[in-house]
Every structure is written in C-alpha cells, then in structure tokens.
Image (cartoon, rainbow, N blue to C red; front, side, top):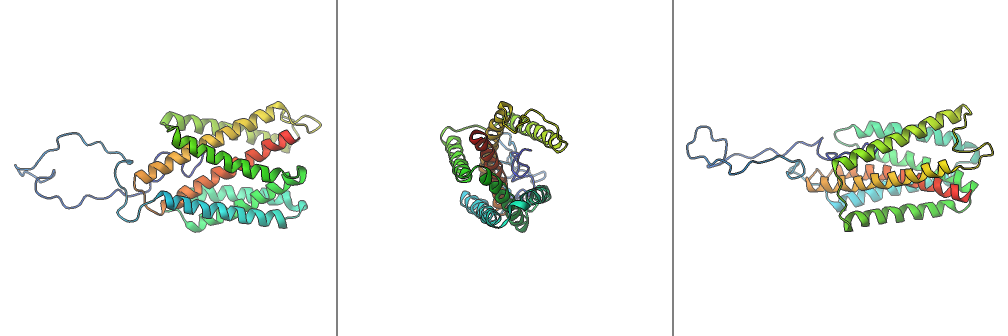
Length: 278
C-alpha cells in the first residue's frame, strides 16, 4: 500500500489544532456593530499550508533528519543482530512473524493523533529483524548481494532527493492519486501471487525449474519505480508540514513514514538484484 503515515498532503496538519486568534483590537473585523471597524480589503482563503497550526515548538528539517537517522539506525542495528544470530532453519518463521507484527504496528501507530515514540521505535526494531532475516536469506543464496543492495538503496534515495530539490518536482493531487492507485494495485498483485504460491499454483513469475521470468523482472522494476515515487511524495509531505509549522512532535511521523518507504525500497532492490544474479 501507499505510505499510510505521510502519504497524504495533510499528514502533519490533520491532527493539529489551528492557532486560535488573539483578542481583537480596535479596527479589526468582528467588533459587533462598531461603525468604525475596518472590513477586509480582499478575500482571505484558508490554507493549512499557509497558516501555523501550533503555538509551541514546530517541526524543522533538522528535526526530521535527526529522527530519521534514529529510526533507520535502529532498523540497521536490529537487522545486523538478526543477520548474525538467526539460524537458517529459523529464517522463515522469523520473516513471517516479524512481517505480520510490523504490518500491524504500522496501522496501529499510524492512526494515532499523537504519534507514540515508543511505537515508532518498536516498529523500527521489529522491521530491523525482518530486514535482517530477509537479507540473510538472499546473502545465503547470492553472497555479496546485501552490500550491493544497501549501497544501491541509499544512492537511489540520495539521487531522488537531489532530483526533487534541483528539478523542482511538483507533487500535485493527481500525482499522489496516481501513485497511490498504482501502489495499491501492485500490492494486490503480489498478495494474490503469494496466496497462489502457498497452494502450489504457478502464476508465471517463476517456471517449473525455479528460474525467474521476464514478468518477475518487470514487476520488480515497477516496484522500485513506485517506491521512488512514494519517496518523492514523502519528501513533499515533509516540506508541506514544515511550511505549515506542524508541531515538533510530528518530526517522528515524518521519520516513521520515510523509514517505511526506505525499507520497501531496499527489499525491492534486493529482490531485483537477485533476479539478475540468478
């Protein structure tokens, strides 16, 4: 699915309480029947991206970078631990358990008005275990692939951020809707393939000998492209949240959302590299 944390333009403002106007002085609108009051000279259009939503500390880019480093660092720490400690015989149960717990945690935390920091860190730890087990499986099959995937993931994210800033990519409502529909559609295809695979039905992604088909490579390429597009919408949402002066606490929401997308991007890059190694 599309990023449920910051995949919408009002991600950092929909839970916030707008700043209440202070006492109105002489000459301001709303003075009852005062004949000397001044009327506005132009229509004031409300926009959540132009008006502050909090009176206390506000979210900044430095906050978002720091919190994202903490969450990604936690993922990396637990991933290394799982990679080193989980035996090969326990990889499948570990993948299934951590994947389910991580998915449930995302949707439990995402709906909270005030994002619980403990929930974010718990997700990072669980997702780290998933990433570590996932990586160990691929490293066992294709030695050296994990380092390549990690480097490719961060290079891709860096290039995406640079392109977003220097080419001034505009994220419109239509762009968001298209990315969301395409991402959900891909998730549906992968879910159906997973269910069929459980019952031994060959959907054409792999042949009878286990070789990867062109369909599998095409799906993985689409998945990587969609992950990059979701990363662009994440960057735009963070930028809008900063412009809207969202509360400082919301920097954890930004870090949470970016971490989700980065993990997805890594797993898809790891998968597509394995296809070419195969």
